Image 1 (tube, rainbow, N blue to C red):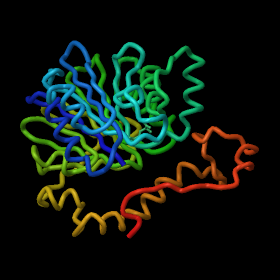
Image 2 (image 1 turned 90 degrees about the vertical axis):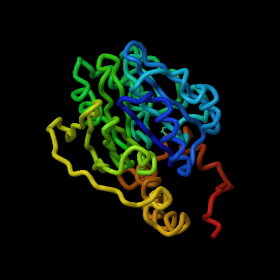
Image 3 (image 1 turned 180 degrees about the vertical axis):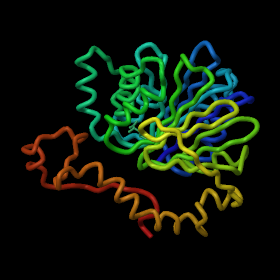
Length: 305
Ligand code: GLU
């Protein structure tokens, strides 16, 4: 697990993003990055390791001015933890930028298609495919491009997206990966979990699978995958920060235990196709797999208990 944040409002975005990512640190990550748009250029910084490194690199966000931005903590699934693979990811001319939590199962197929159309890939991630696919479908209407890309993607995703042509908008979508939307008089936010927005608001919307949200400085617009506008109700959160991090459970271990069925399902589902186990990212042929005689399972965490 890992985290997404996004902000558009009256404050400088970078400190809000860094603060939100810090509140999501408990989810685990190997690298972090933010992208901030000042109306002219989308600037980004990424760093492997602790969030502290990114905070130092950006002087707590001061080097990235602007009031619109998206941020990410990564838990690598496709490609090693590195600055190059860390999010955000761009299209070729840096006019579209994306952060992503989850796994795009059919990314190899999509990557091949895009490569055939001349798209070049800089990272090993499945996420970069999304940035290029948005570029391919974008004809001036972000919502339309996002909806088209969602129709093509298989897998799980929470996404934060910005378009250079639309400086006063942030987009987000989700499928089988959590994403919430917070609204306050000083701006609107997206995040993977409630603690990231509690400093600014207690009124949140829970995005359902395959829903899209457009955030502006003073408004929220929700859509389904077919671009039809939706009415959604906000939920008022009255947990304190401590309880919010634990999702209402008494302690983290209890939360982890209750999340196990979902964690196992999320890990296995993308790798089972038509009743067969398919692990594309292994990059091995059936023959090579047959020669394996020993498998070591290396893990950490509180599973020991
Ligand atoms: N699959 C993406 C990657 O490896 C996203 C991982 C995540 O959820 O942080 O970059």
